[in-house]
Image (tube, rainbow, N blue to C red; front, top):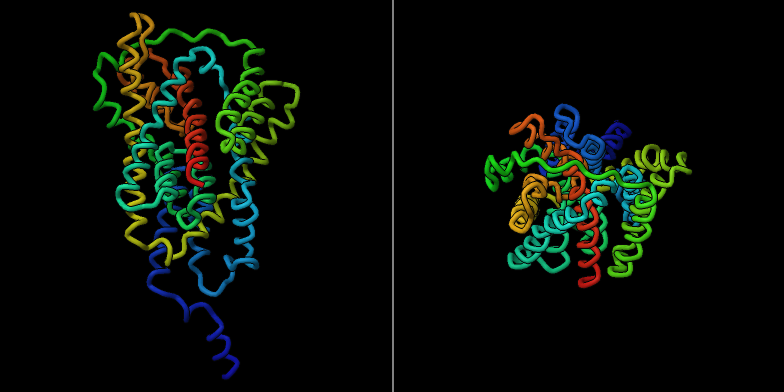
Amino acid sequence: MSNLFELVNMSGFLYLTPQMLIMWLIAAVLVYLAVAREFEPLLLLPIGFGILLANLPITGLMEPGEGLIWRFYHYGIQWEIIPPLIFLGVGAMTDFGPVLANPKLLFLGAGAQVGVYITFLSAHIFGFNLAESAVIGIIGGADGPTTIYLAAKLAPHMLGSCAVAAYSYMAMVPIVQPPVMRLLTTKKERTIRMKTNRKVGRLEKILFPFLASLMIILLIPAAAPLMAMFMLGNVFRESRVVERLSHAAQNELMNISTIFLGLPVGATMNAEQFLRPDVIFIFVLGLVAFMISTASGVLIAKFMNLFLKEGKKINPLVGAAGVSAVPMAARVVHSMGAKEDKKNYLLMHAMGPNVAGVIGTVMAAGIFLTLIQ
């Protein structure tokens, strides 16, 4: 009997708290969204499981210096390894052709970052310090890896909540963006047909990542880890001489990195750190940032149309793709345009600001790191 009592005392059941059970429910919701609704399953599923593990008592999985998942977090995220590897894969999947064919679409990607800066200022006004405000603001770019990268460097205690917020809004692009886009455009604007993009030559595509790396990294050195890997992945893709490396970056390496990103991010969300009023406020501010970014992209497209001749005008819906949710935002833009005009093909036009938005969000993160760190 004494051995039995000792076994019971050593189990985790005696250490469970109501707060842990609440976190189990949150983990279950994320797993449900990933499995049943297919909302960003590649990340929400490991994040959800990580939340469950973080709220199992006396496991030691997140014990500093010893825990298995703590090692994933420390060496993968704190040492800035996993997010840049994700960007290597994203770069290998990215086609800069739409941007090169119509460079003015870069302004839409840059303009969609307005939500990042407005939310940064708003969060600071509401009492968050500069580092925390920067991490909350970057959620508006809907770029999960950049959010994780910035949070790990500026506000590690916010890593889990901000990452879940960023990926949740990425998953909810088809729900959040259309009402904003419809509110800010007329039916006539939504039916604007844009001319087919010119064909971009191979030399242009090869030179672009080199030139972009030089300009952006020299301008904002703090953005170098993410930008360098992003452009390297694109060099693999466009050179067409290292297909094995390009394939590995897009598939095996990307999949492994995703596992070792999602699990430790979820494991940072223990009950003590997550079940606080300010965390809920972070989710609200992140949603506001995302909506403002969507709106600013649309409004900048409308503003540009004031100076463009007939036949060269931009469908304002394309501006909403300036957030970094690649390629989900571009698909939503195309879907909305097709509802108004079945023959209006906006996908490739929307990919321009969509890709530019990734660059814009990384640059915003670099600016925050430069000014705040």
